[in-house]
Image 1 (tube, rainbow, N blue to C red):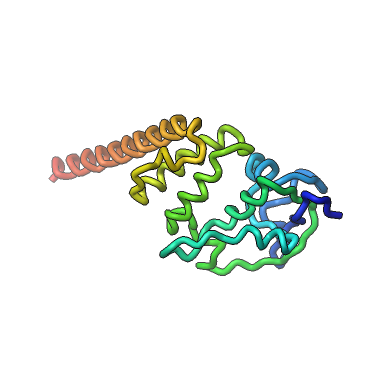
Image 2 (cartoon, rainbow, N blue to C red):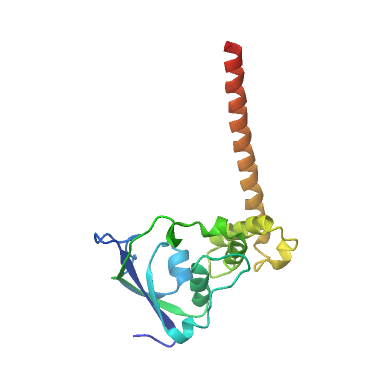
Length: 197
């Protein structure tokens, strides 16, 4: 079933009532990889993967000081750069989500050091260009939060970095304007209230 460069079998998860989590794959059977098939086609969500053990052991989760977790997809992305996955529309796991569990946590905001690493590694091909730019902006965002001094030098894709930086700047201009408009609305509302009084 597995060819030499195929190291993973990925299927579906469902709730106890049989509802498929995040829907089925577009194909009943296809050989691809996590970047080209999942990330580039926006097919994210909980799936169930089985890896060839000796390959999976070569890709341990990064250990980052003072951070307990990191987005699990970092390992899937690293494996995808060298190996293929078989995707099939078969349910392999029944899941139940617990409030406050790992699946409900925001890895990115809660663990900014890991998020910086995650998004920096997503700025290179075979990620589609649009995603490279988006992830470059997010890399810059978290690098700023982490008070990095050599953000450009540490960027994995320096060619795309200027576009990512532009998106980052536009995002903050937009957020600043939204805050200003909201503040202006509050001031105007308060002014009317005091005028009536």
